Length: 271
Image (tube, rainbow, N blue to C red; front, side, top):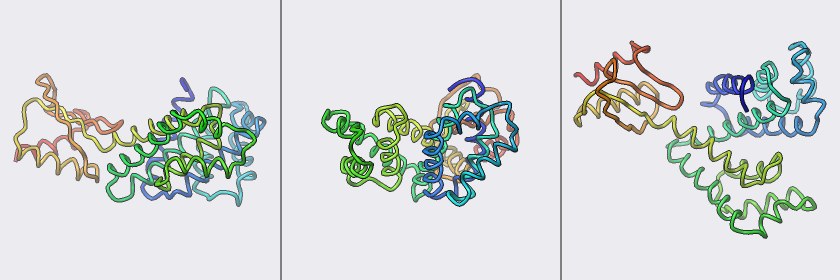
């Protein structure tokens, strides 16, 4: 996905982020169900990505199709996608898949020790990839067009018998709706999304000089307070750094342009 579609997806993820703190697995399930509807109807995909069609018409079409079938929260997320521009009809579905998977992954992230839960989720998904990838019989069974969805789902979950609710949802999605990919390839994409969420738990800190133990403790406390979570800190020494400190957490860069936030961190280090 590139160009205008890439920008639309980035905007959609940014809009989704505030909702994820309180989102349940139901949101992910609803978004995946909308994706199923979208993938089954080429005319619908064209209608919802037609740049000449009024946004109000698209919204009315979505409301008519989804009313009573999904929760309002999921419908609103999809409406945001439909209101954006897409390079191709396929890109709309790809973006919806990313939002659905991200919503599911955030549920694991929000349970207890988020970082540890993401590690566990990643390992469960990797386990599926390893086991299925090493067995031609399993691959054929999961690709069998004559097998029922229930049978495929049951077989897939036997591969990872202790799978969490989130892992089970993502694995079932990959097996039942691989969207032109092998199930293991789609699960690999989900793993990449887990890795992206994990970056939100790591603070890459660049400073101009070594920090002593007390300063590291203060920096840890300051960053935890700033981001509202227990972060892992990776410190890099960069004598050329302007402003004394730079912090990267996920997609966010806190540098000299964020004077107030940096001033607070510098104050904590200097005390």
